[in-house]
Length: 380
View 1 (tube, rainbow, N blue to C red):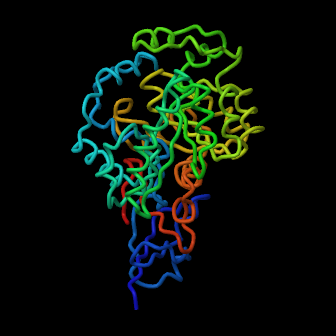
View 2: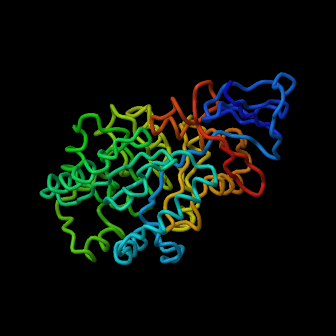
View 3: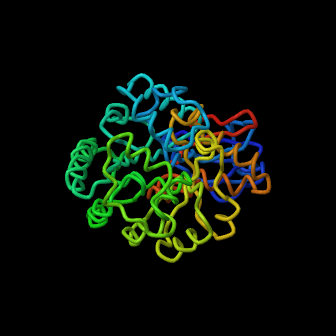
């Protein structure tokens, strides 16, 4: 008879709701969920823990390849200046920094990661890793004539990630952001077969909407600084989101950051991409722009929210629990139960891996963590 693992905490969060503390989570040896039963029916061998037992977290947006940039860029620069420093100071990636960051995420309870990649630096780290990775190979290019060559480069990177051929890994090519992708490149991406989900940095700074409204603002200086030809860009007179979202209206889309998204943007998304996920990275938003998204708006409009950490270039740690704590500090009215679903089941759905991750349902292997006021840690 195979050994079963049994965990009892002060409560059990099952991916949707917090169950009372008299419940016991039962797993098989390989971490597969067997059941959640009342303590009096659990039998012997129950491990009692202080804290809430939860499925492993899903970090829907991360940049593991920037792990060597911790503390390199000061806080509060605003996004265009932040991007300038990333491009000028990123240098060579550091395998040891990536390894340390990934291990810390695993130990803190992150079971799956949507990871942004501009090259193949994270390939070795992902090979055989205990964490599930979806590698979002980012493509960018603001000059229309260069769209095909930019996409070809990203496809060459994608092909190397595909060679991992691991059930713990998937990948897709995605646009970086509305201010860095031309209409021609958006169009090429929109017709790629079997390329999902799409992830995009969305409305992270006011300068993005300003660019689209009347072609003014800090991004013009950014383009000039790097010698980028923005002459072909035509403003739309509105915010950035309606200009690109229709390209992907038939695909699952993860909108990341959303710091300056308006009610009109949210309603446009509900109409044109009803399966969209709104990924929040609050500590990175505070680090770069000293501003948070209008989470109250997203909740009132019934948006499906997930959570990410962004990178160590824009954060002091890669911890979903710290992101949750930041939300609870600024939005104390939001129930913990709701935010925990953002951090688990919603993230798993966003990455298309909810058959295995995100909740304690029979047959799943989401990982098991325990959460206390001091933090989160993995127990299986």
